[in-house]
Length: 182
Image 1 (cartoon, helix red, strand yellow):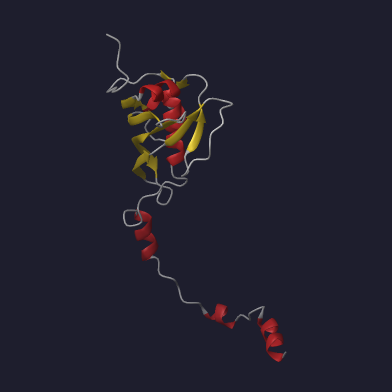
Image 2: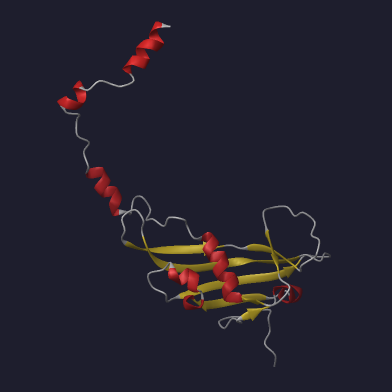
């Protein structure tokens, strides 16, 4: 019996043809190893773990418009850029892509869906990795109330200016006097 692409749980294919999957109305659900995504694994302190994938491929009714949407989730161990301690980053992406063959003319769509030109089969892990990299924060940090750097900053007391600072002249005082005389 041939595998059904309607529901795929657990084992996900390495290579997919997104437009063919959309014509069938397929849904891919399962996990991909993080080690199959070298660019994403490079930003993680541990290159192990799994990415949870739930992608639906659909064809818009009565049109030649194909869509891929779903959710991708992974937990990465990264370094907080505020306190430089290890933290867990729960990363989630919700891709919404319009699938197209090269040369096909698409009418402008509402919303902000990106267009993916899918002339040939694609690597599923490469597609998932690209979407997660786009969702990755530029500077990963703990939440402000959970970061130890916040506690350290709150404990620093600003010193009162000493006599030398108080006695120093402001270099812009001359400009202030000129402004007042006009």
